[in-house]
Amino acid sequence: DAGVIQSPRHEVTEMGQEVTLRCKPISGHNSLFWYRQTMMRGLELLIYFNNNVPIDDSGMPEDRFSAKMPNASFSTLKIQPSEPRDSAVYFCASSLSLAAGNEQYFGPGTRLTVT
Amino acid sequence: GENVEQHPSTLSVQEGDSAVIKCTYSDSASNYFPWYKQELGKGPQLIIDIRSNVGEKKDQRIAVTLNKTAKHFSLHITETQPEDSAVYFCAASLDKIIFGKGTRLHILP
Image 1 (tube, one colour):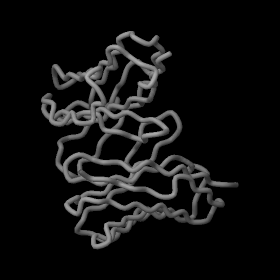
Image 2 (cartoon, one colour):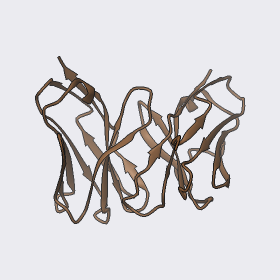
Image 3 (spheres, each protein chain N blue to C red):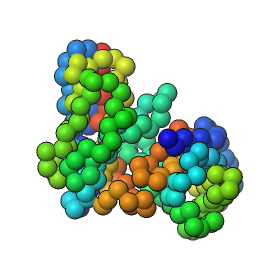
Image 4 (spheres, one colour):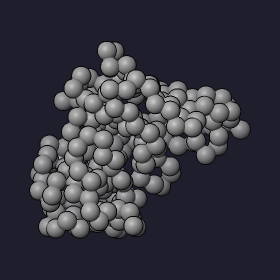
């Protein structure tokens, strides 16, 4: 398996623009997680899905952030409009299920820079 | 909700010596404690984990200990090697995983 796939790997955009980050989880995994990593805040859980259904979006910082999972093999994280403070590395991870003890497999991340 | 504190934030160790990273958690209901290693430019990767019904677990040069009463858990790396240089994250989980802020480990030649 190719692991969790994220695209793009790098994104540079201007403030106010819409940004869409994409994730393909490992085939057969039922749970998907979006994280944001910054030096100041570390690794923050933004939202997670189980069987394509959003379970907990309490980590989403603002209404400018939204996430969807239209099917088991694809998820998007959208920021509209983007701001410089959104600059971070965004990771997608997947696991077999939400049960404790299931390893989360992380993708390589998308480095977002908003100027 | 769960809160995970991790110390130190940076650790420099001479090659061959041991490294210890310590974490505390707040929710006594948490029952799964994974440790992740993140190398430069990559996503975190699970290296070892421990469940709440176990006090210690070892895998070659790495070991984890858990003290449920004190809500402490630690990562021990023995005979450190250059490839151990990375950022290490502890985490605690009941349903979702909550990560500590990370420890940047430098192995000095």
